Length: 265
Image 1 (cartoon, rainbow, N blue to C red):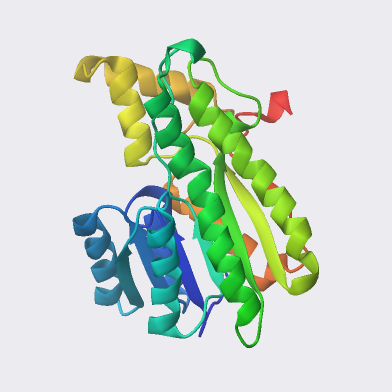
Image 2: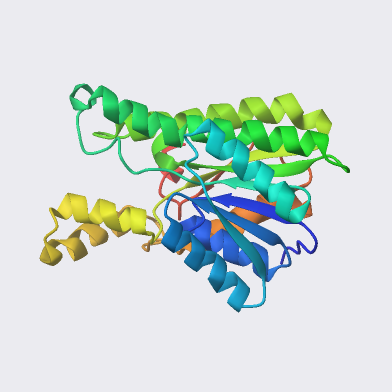
């Protein structure tokens, strides 16, 4: 088990799903946690949950696609806790799917790329600057990508393109800062029981409760382990990438998908 006593972790998209699980695990293992999300109610609830369990956490409202919000988020992290050791850039929107490539509109493109790709870059930009400036310098960053970004997906061009871009950003930045004590890796997530995936099931089933179980069974059937992952399982991988156990790991795309893409890579 990793230990993060005295360290500071920033988790975007930390109010639900994988992000919330990661925030909770960071806190359980001694880190002071900043949870960032757009929704105030769920974000404050996630931070309160950690505090009630004896951990340290604060919530900062932020839209990662907004440069001023991200700059304030990192500044607030340092104001509250004095430094930044880990950035888990996990916030994303599930739009950019369920249409043919030529049928998306420009507004959808801008929103998906603004959060899923630009948002990751903005977070890295300000996290890296802080990590370089602090004493002692250094840190670790994990960016959440998706198996959809490994090669694309039908009727998912925008979402897949954004997640593929996250991989390129991660690998490029990892090389830029490898000699300056900052490790940067990607979590390539498969299917996990999260509100986002539940929304996908709702969309595919047309909102028909009688069909949701069949859609979930179809997804499960594509996974060699024959189950959908738990958010904690993805969070554990992200925490390992941040930990000293991964001290020689940077520029890596860690695929956590129950074997879903094993036959295609």
